[in-house]
Length: 569
Image 1: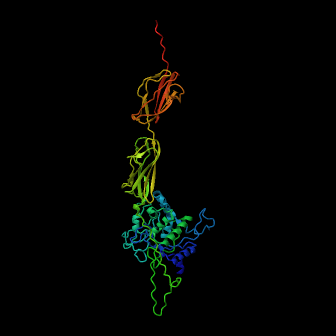
Image 2 (image 1 turned 90 degrees about the vertical axis):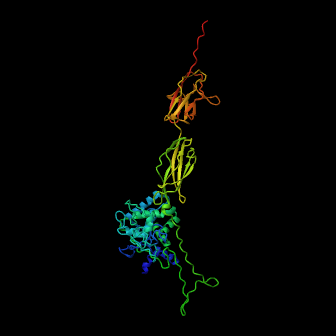
């Protein structure tokens, strides 16, 4: 009996003696525990696993018993981890049944897709699954991942355990009087009602299915904006599963063990732990120690109580009172916890300068269970130098999500400067979720440009062209206002290099210019500055090209006036 007691830790005790026993057990645990035979005492008395949910205990499992075997002291060797560990040490305990391992890894991937900030490691699920049910009783599951018979904890009837009266009519646990922890991850029914998942796609949320249970456990551990890469958050998550410091220590030990390396074994061949924990006398179900009764006065002729340690100067010191384990902070219900922010169908965000974007930025918020989340404030912010703003002239707007979880930003009005910018959607306060969209403003364009008249443009050498040149730019048949147009004087339109002689514009100092950057007015019209001829007669060309690629070529002629003979006398 004494040897049996040394093989396990007792749940909930916080005294110095129990803490010392925990260290001793860890030091002594050099080899895997012997497997349980079918029908042994520990077979059905699995531990808790789930969410906050009991009427009296805010723990997923109702603080029911759990397996207390610690991992081998020498952990499995992994490439790059250590070159001094015996390869075979702990190899059996490092094995995880194939379906169970697949369920843990699938849950990690699923949560990473909906709540990447949680950083859930599958090894934590494996540690809890080991402590709660010995990896679904060594991986005894069918092809769909369901245990052939329910894994049930004891009735939570207040006799050594928490008192949790029936919440499911016995639907999950077969007990219509009290709740019991159910399945490989040991959820109490009230917890499963909130956190249950259908991870294997069979249309049922079954706590006895390892895929469903592993995903539910993952979402539960991530609730409340936890980041499980942060040690304090991980501790809070595990304690929310079962409020016991010994439970936390045991799960943490297996977590570290599995992080060093694991391997897959066939379903049904996993190593089972020896026995579940039992509450220690003087310990409440939540893991805090009850006050020790004061010794009764000795009877006449009896032995007097031994005095406590002497204080300096005489007297005795009072026996220190044990410090209760503080309960973990309440976890917000998953339906009230933001899980993810995703694109709700926003297409490419592109508009012409001064125009209105056809697409509106749209996001969908989901809670920790993956369901649409309504009534959530989502803030949209424009960042960039294009001058783009939301309707109403604002760079930042806040929108409340609708029943389907969507939040649609107001229409975007493009600025006058072309270029790229971003729109960022942000939601949540404890651990905000953000989604960033790339957007761009293109310059105003014209797909056609023509002269408004057809007069020949002729000037004498050194003179100004008498007729002004006016053009109109259009885009899809409508006037193209504010379009950039480049005017270049060339000798040949087929070789559009700027000419160094012939017609020209003039700058402010009167010097010749043969290239100008111009812009159409509000009606798409463009009136060219005055054109001048130099002393070189000939035929020249003026090429005008719009933003958008429309081009028109205008011929210019420089010729001397014909000399006329004087009239005969």
